[in-house]
Length: 171
Image (cartoon, rainbow, N blue to C red; front, side, top):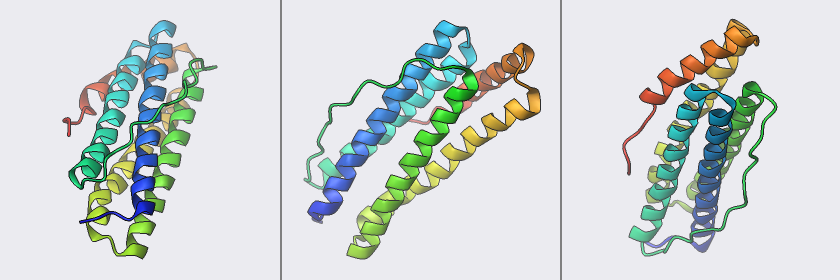
């Protein structure tokens, strides 16, 4: 199977997005760790690993097709946040951007009748629904539990418990 140059470029652009997301979550984890949110730090370290796994799935897909993945340079992510809630809102925005990009590639594959790439991307489409839902659920916790120190502490504990359940196996 041969990829069109347009889809190959879109998948390589997606590698950049996934790599940037991984770095962004790594920076978020670092901010959480030094700010005293150990549960959130563990959660975002796991998220960073997950995004790297997503990137590798695309790298392997391209390489397996002989299309050769391009490993991009990535710019430094934001490394400081006003609050844990602001950080979570940023993470949700990042996931929404990734979802939009995946949907664009899916549309391309449909237009070009590239069924193999379309089938490959189905996993990402489903994954993005889960990712956005996770962050929306965390944001709801701020309304439910509050934004005072006790509420934030409960959210940090919740993130700690989620960190241990969200690790997906490597590709």
